[in-house]
Amino acid sequence: MSRRTVSVPHPNGDPTPSNFGQKDPLESNGDPHAGAPEEKVELGKKVTLLRGISIIIGTIIGAGIFISPKGILKNSGSVGMSLVVWMACGILSLFGALSYAELGTCIKKSGGHYTYILEAFGPQVAFVRLWADMIAIRPAGFAVTALAFGRYILEPIFMPCGVPEAAVKLATAIGLTLVMYLNSMSVSWTARIQIFLTFSKLLAFAIIIVPGLYLLFKGETKNFENAFEVNTVDLSGLPLAFYSGMYAYAGWFYLNFVTEEVENPERTVPLAICISMVIVMICYTLINVSYYTVMSAEELLASNAVAVTFAEKLMGDFSVAVPVFVALSCFGSMNGGLFAISRMFYVASREGQLPEVLSMIHIRRHTPLPAVIVLYPMTLLILFLGDIYSLLNFMSFLRWFFIGVAVVGLIYMRYTRPDMPRPFKVPIIIPAVFSFTCFFMVFLSLYSDPINTGIGFVISLTGIPAYYIFIYTERKPKWFQKFSDSVNRSLQIILQVVPAEH
Image (cartoon, rainbow, N blue to C red; front, side, top):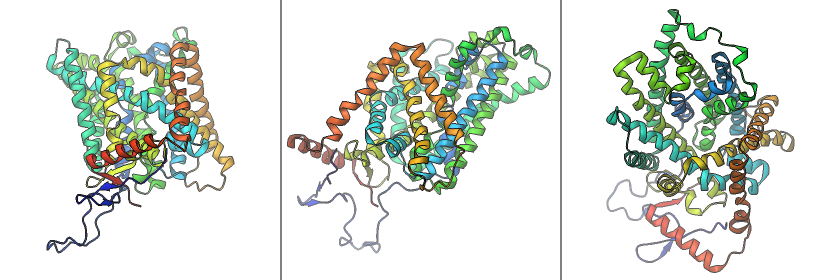
């Protein structure tokens, strides 16, 4: 995709370069500060260590741990094995997070998976990843999380009746719009609200963990008797249990999407990742111990919302607060996810693989407004018209495939670019074990669900002809180039955005 500078029409009709919205230093109008240099239009380094931790924890902890951890119990076969799987998935996710910490400190660009694949394997593979993200993975993922938010924020209002589907979709659309607006208006406020939502999730964990452990220490251990019954363990189901566990921990990579906005990334990125993963591992393990203290394995398997069942058994009327915490948790996942993913589109545009307007920044807010809102129409369309869960089935395994490719890229660059500065370096066995785990889960998907997995592969492979049509071919028809420039110029004026100043 060609990178042509788009001029913005000046009010007097003269063309002017893309510094639209900046004051002319000659037009003082008596202002004593006139002519002083204005703040550069760029994405500032506003992600501190605390904000980085809140992005990771707030995005990892979604609705799943509150609603339905029974997939791991069902496929592991016993209470003891399910706890082992939770801890093992946490350690494997930590391996992946440490690998990304090295990638984030030696490649100091935002963009996450996309950037690392681009650096290691070139633009074609990176674009296929980007294409799958834009047309299905991210819109479907946001729609599912937003639907959970819409359902659980309304549940206390409609209890004990079910929530009407029309009301759920309306609340979902409002939640999505609010997240998009927040991310468009202020980086600082987005980060502050993410910190608040992260502490809300940790408070919800404390409300479940503290009474559960209190009962455990008082001697409520009957549900842990024969916790490792061998005859109940189904070895063939263990890979599926690990798949569920790794999905529950997914989100540790989101800080790498905003590396350029992190203060002192060489120190902050590894530290934030390690602190966040330890906190999440401890919380996940303890919350499951609390569940098993209050509920038997049979009760947990029969529940569709484990945290709600837990609260009803232990807290009575206070259980009405649990859906609110679940909704806040979903909102935090949407907020952190959008904050990170928008930076991937921003970087991809800067690399020439998406329309130029997506790499522009609002002249006053200093947010990547076009990159933030680009998913909004597709997400709403899927929400009201599409089959969201089929899309997720098609695409969920591709997430692990491309994460595995990015970590293999780390190993590959150890040999092809040995002189690259690596402020944080992990033993080679860590990325090797993690990438093997990712590819094993992909193989498991091919084996257990070949039709949906195959459809997902076909959808992603459409990115190959798209790359050669839109990116690789340098000489485009004049009408196409004029149309592209006109759209970019119009959007630049409407959204009040300009290219970042360097």
